[in-house]
Image (cartoon, rainbow, N blue to C red; front, side, top):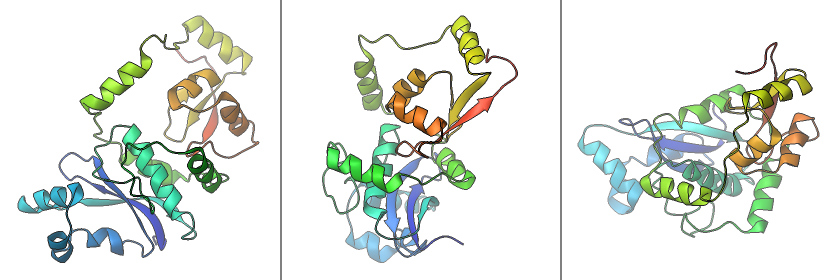
Length: 232
């Protein structure tokens, strides 16, 4: 049974892409209300136009529960976190605000206070296997926009990407006793530096999770992988 308090997403039936992130204190009731004619006739915006375009083709959106919560207190911060997370991945969201009670544009910058609040809300909350599967599902069919690709390219200009050599991989594998590690989506990492650069988190935070001193780094979790042979 789905929790009363959830962060949910609306998906496109044609592309499978995630198009909207929202929160609900009434379970799946609110996600279903987005497609009601009474609401579509009153509301305006990218989300409404997208849903109307689906209806003209005889289609409707899909609903995916991204995260179930224990209380309403965390909802605003977590909604903002997921909007920022999936927007950074290149998902073509129709959200016109950061979420929560904020009406700042989705390209607005997060303050340090906001980041600390999100970190506090997520601290100690491990991802279940069902949650990991949901995160993977909402990324299926995701294609980064040209604007996102340009931003990513510009941010990397002048930087030499870290790509461990085969010799380094084998050395690290021997040092770690054949232990690599992966994140909540199954992405494999050879070093703390590699995870830090790819996810934009500190090496010490990743190390703390791997050593059991903390459970999460923001929305990320890490788990060691023991292999009998070095990764080729």
